[in-house]
Amino acid sequence: MEKRIVFVGGIAVTSDGITNLRFRSEDSLLDGDIIVFSIDIASYYSNEFYQGMRCLDDDESFRLRNDCKHWRSELNAALTDGKTIITFVNNSPQVSVATGEKRYSGTGRNTRTTRIVVPFDPYHVIPCGFGTVIRRSGERIKMAGDLGILATYWHEFGNHTTYQGYIEDFTGTPILETQTGSKVVGGILRKPEWKGTLIFIPIPDLPSVVDLRVKEFQDKAKKRPSQNAGSAAKRIETYRVKAERSVVMQFISAIVGIDKAARDATESTPPPAWSQEGRFTLTGEENLQASMDTNAANLHKLQDERTSLKQALRKTQELKGLLYEKGKPLEKAILTALKLLGFQANNLQEADSEFDAVMVDQDGTRLIGEAEGKDEKAISIDKLDQLERNLREDLVLQDEATARFATGVLFGNAYRFTPPETREDFFTTKCKLAAKRSQIALVKTTDLFNVAQYLEGHPNADFAEKCRRSIKEGNGETVIFPSIPGQE
Image 1 (cartoon, rainbow, N blue to C red):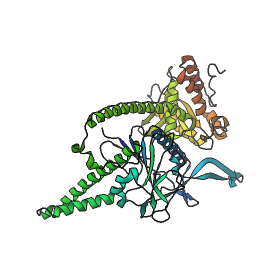
Image 2 (cartoon, rainbow, N blue to C red):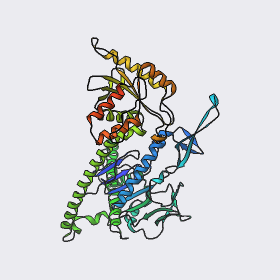
Image 3 (tube, rainbow, N blue to C red):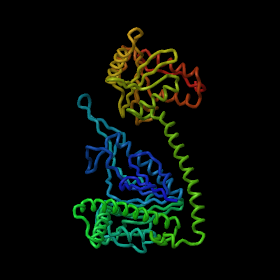
Image 4 (cartoon, one colour):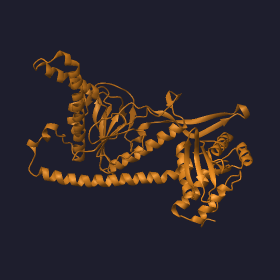
């Protein structure tokens, strides 16, 4: 049975049994038998620099930290489960990330806000202390000793490999070093708590291997009888396609060879591809391999079930967006909560109109909601202006004979990076005054989370109806939901 290989970031390989994931994703590694991991933070947008490093804004800082936390957890789970992880050491840089803290100086119009940022090394994604990556490039690499499990791989790709960084104070077993200074650029790391193996190697230059393979095909063609000169360009294109396919298969075979040797937990040499030909098969080997394939198929089935459960868990956890999200994720969490309260709730995109939430109560009452999340400030009157425009547009969209103004609701998630119990007032004074004049209900999404959390686990029609009534009868005030049963 073919191995499933998952590539994350960096190198992307197209072939059967291969999955390519972006570093900026929330996918699981547990579907893979072998993980080929590269750090790639180029997609995290930044237009600022601080102390010579790219400085990410608050949102991108939060996303990078979350993604690194996600991959660190996934890598640790994979290693604990016995998988082989090959990490390509690249020069992905350190960046400055926001801590969420801000300092203020001056008063009145002279008030200045300073974002607090700290250096962040994306190699923190590695789930152990392995050393420090120093971003320095070079071409000359030597063996630190016996190549062991990397012997076949290095024989095939070593001449096409340079290094983009070396590892200072490496805690594992060095295998590859710089020619001068003996700095570690490749090695193996195992931990007692892991069944798997973590391998660090420099990035191979696969395009150069393809170019060499194309030249080999051309040289072989020259020894054959002459062909129509008019098809030369087409033949070169064919050679390149053939070469790319050949190099990919060779690369995958070498990766699988590393994995096999690592799983054997020995320093044996991975078998070359030619040794796997049928003429070298031993008696009983096929039956044993078939049994192993059956076990692997069962394992993959369990992994698929785990993936489905994880996706369901992620769906369930959407409600937590009421605590810390903004934008579309916050809107989705609000709609989920409103449905738990018994509203018919959806967003609406019609012609030039877009409403974050259109709610209809069981008694027919119609409500229009607008959502806003703020990092470190209260919800301002600006969002209330948008909601009032939406209410007028909604009136226009209704049938002439039955038209009536819907009730307006402003959902606010202020100071979203701060624990709910320590947040300041969610809405500015101007926002509250305008809401009072327009009879628009103000809902703190953290309060909405509390009642939705209860209803998610304890369906209660009477309590849900009281919660809906609290929103409908907000009358320009901040909504106070009824006490949760048992917590009065």
